[in-house]
Length: 90
Image (tube, rainbow, N blue to C red; front, side, top):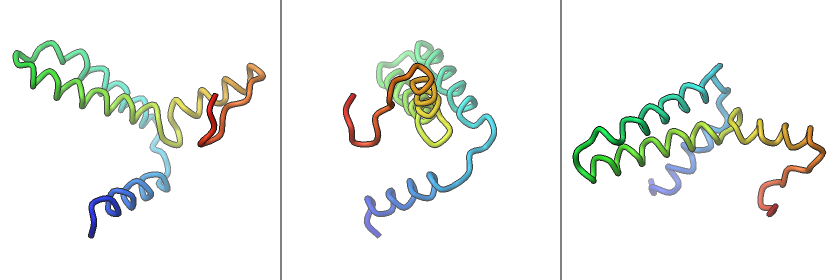
């Protein structure tokens, strides 16, 4: 199986599953804790790896079906604006 098709199937399965209560908050907290721990590493490579993992966790918390992106869309609707659909530019 090709790596791209395997990753696409994995992303599709993740998008179909229901959200766990508080999942995005837990992932966000993990990312923030990792970001705070970035300065503890003595090596530049260690800092970069921890920062990359923190960014991945924070990005994961902000995306997905129950994430911050959906909340931002709701807030934009309340303000009277229109949230751009996928593929549209703001």
